[in-house]
Image 1: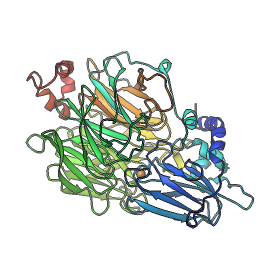
Image 2 (image 1 turned 90 degrees about the vertical axis):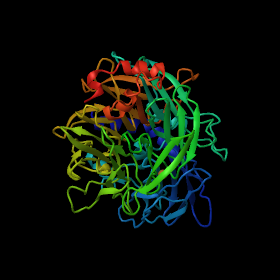
Image 3 (image 1 turned 135 degrees about the horizontal axis):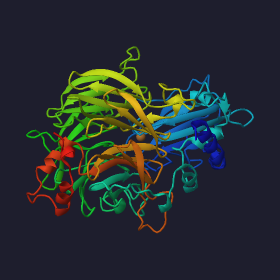
Image 4 (image 1 turned 120 degrees about the vertical axis):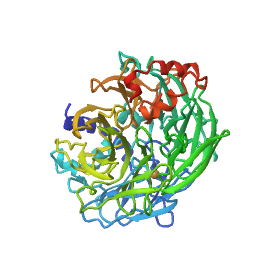
Length: 599
Ligand SMILES: [Cu+2]
């Protein structure tokens, strides 16, 4: 199905749902504001209007809306950033840093206003401003160029709302907009994988999973047995002492007996017993910790965790010793405000860390830093410059991948807003080029997210250094780049909200790329020898009595174990047969082929 048909079908299917969302309520008077939107940690309802209970509110021109960021409804800091507005409007709202407190906008021109958070880019709100006739004017192609690529000049506000998958406040909305599959849709790959695949199913609802204030918070980790492709365990945060909120990304220690998890809508990281799934300890580390990568460098910080704080400016080093997670270092990942997200350590030795700094000030301009992993010092920072073709695409850089390619360290960094993947030679500290990975509905390439409604998220390099797999969010594609030519060689279908990618060992040799999607309850399996999708694994735990809008939903971080990248696998292989590993892990290592060990 081509893109246009896909969208029009979606428009038709969701129109009914959108109408229920768009029903205007009675405006609340709160110090003169027409409505208040509370930023929340609730999937699909991240901006919750006091009037409608949803991320949509309708007001009259001249009225004000307040946006409240407080611990009533969220455990971390955010921005309220206006992305789209009617032609002629002078409304502006954005911040150069994440924050708590109240932000306000008074709306001038009737039409549709779209907001998001720059720390958590899928948090979305829509304010509809009515004209004198009580109608919300259409969204035009001048406001949202994507519409022009559909071949029309404008679309009704209801139609636009109906295709925004990030707005799904109720279970009925989620059923309509998100991909909720059952066991009949499951496809198990013919060749087994090795070990386990841990997936942060960040949006799963868990009864009685509450924070310290007693507020329900979402998220589980779903563990898939790679030998059978069955869900073998589900980890939740009920025993975390309230230190669990939207589990986002994970890494493991080298004995593979512990998994570390970051909570993107909280302040905490957790250490989880891999075998039992119980939470061993948790630590408060700062605002919105995202990804965790352990340092594999022998003799220097080996095993220490690197943890960027996406609502702050620093990356932490955290040591796991004596049963405690202790911060041993905290350093900025660039000059000024950084908001670092998904770092990657150079393959093999881990002596360099590539960090995307998502935004540096007002607007989406970000930077990419190369750090000395051992000292944390900034060796190079590429800052966005609209007049420099090499750095102009660095708009909300969000995730990095890295590996040896023909003996050269090459990093691939996804830029959410520009739709480009930036290729960096880490050895010479030079940007080589930028590769467009997204498409407008009419097939045009090299255009930004306002034209495509797509943006790349995770872009890891395959452990053999041959390919980069890019998961593209909002629309539904997986792009595969050849690292020798830096060209797109394949585009594969993905599920709604495509997000996380990581590589696991395929039994007998080769690799699987496991791809998680936020708005689907399945994990896709891409065979890297065939460059094709060979599996779709249901993430809803079969022990759950029924599959609902929330089970197994919200796939983001993916952690296959053993870690497949040879530099990360080597410290575990070195412990093989020493008695320091469980028989299960020793059994996995026996299946590692010579090629998978790397050189
Ligand atoms: Cu946020």
